[in-house]
Length: 258
Length: 218
Image 1 (cartoon, each protein chain N blue to C red):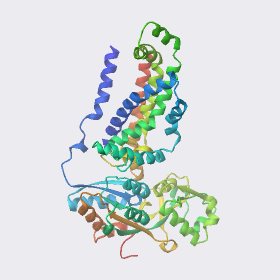
Image 2: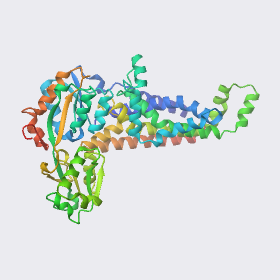
Image 3: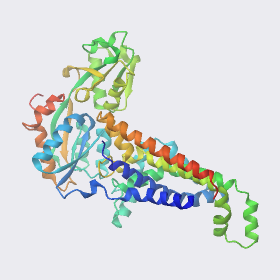
Image 4: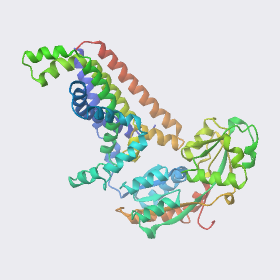
């Protein structure tokens, strides 16, 4: 008897995943896939629904590290528009012929923030306060490949703090991972993107953008896109009169400010 | 309440991947256990390699192969099959990540079967195919089940390889581990915790059920 039950259970288990799901039954609306840098996660949480409402199009938002997304685009990923946190990656894609060069636009500049763990109970006002002995560990994104990590290193160098703080630094794989170190209370402070720093466990202070080279964020419509006009419309919304205040509120410098 | 599409997708991907891994891995395990052929040690090493390389790096190499301009991708494209950045790529990623676990477990199981029993069947005129199904597999089945369970769980949990070759496309290729990661990235911890709990509870129930089954005799 148990054999029958086991077989029946196995059959049900194997059949379940093939049942039709809601995602497959969506009405045919024009749709685009947007590849966006992870520092846009909160700003695009607001901008994408606004765009869907305005354009009637459905957006699939794929967030990731700009480097990974760029490599996937280079190898034929089904994206329509790419919002990079790193200008150089878009330039590389332009050389590889993967994007429509005329659509390239500098849609924002990233800003750094000093993120302090509330649990640590420290009041740090600017990067110089990182020298205080209570700050035992400081997280930054890996300066070798993460744009915000590179900017954090430049800011610390500009204040002649880099060599002194180096023994206390911990590297995160990307900017979000770096913030998680503070959220978990594993480090007292971190230098992250201002655009992702407003989370419950963290007090954030904006860092003076003159301390590092500009974090140019560039976007472009991909050559393989079947609906380039939709990608372009999103690009224009982000940089336009409606998008700019939102981007600004989430901690970006917007066109006209740089 | 989080979107449940990733749960169904992951089950689908992991089940298919486990079936494919069994289909390819069992013959390979038998070959490694019972046959001597040139390059055998090399094959044995190659099977384990996916466990050694960092998953995202392995995924990148795999992407180079299956991308539309890659050698495998071009051949498949000629047949009208698109692999990279589809759910099929997620199945491939799960297979690559889990095949070593099945092959090594099954190989050990086959090796522990007394070769004299197979020899005896051979003298009685059984075919090699018949010997495998009536002697080797029934005696080694616990190892095969163990390997299958490990492979299924690894397939269910694959992150790095899937991220690279299938992308993290919601509603298309976003599997359970990718969805959990995405929720954490977006600071939606409640959804992340719910999905993680679901995955842990589901697999725990599955393993307990299988444990009970394994105590019964076939």
